[in-house]
Length: 74
Ligand code: SF4
Ligand code: SF4
Image (cartoon, rainbow, N blue to C red; front, side, top):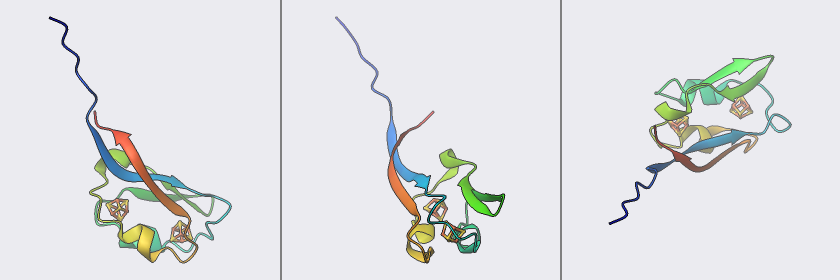
């Protein structure tokens, strides 16, 4: 019998568009899970696996820079 282990997946934030981001830090303040950090005046995803799928950052970003998608859980 062949067994296959499928990767576990979950929704999380997947991308922050640096061209849309204006560096306001709202998303960093919105995130209770400390997923997003700032670097060079732009937000980036530092700890994606910690995303708890609340999507506050997506709703609060004034530039609609943050998108969500499926990620593999490790
Ligand atoms: S809320 Fe949006 S515009 Fe502001 S820092 Fe985060 S990604 Fe950039
Ligand atoms: S969806 Fe929620 S937990 Fe995930 S990065 Fe955004 S604010 Fe943080």
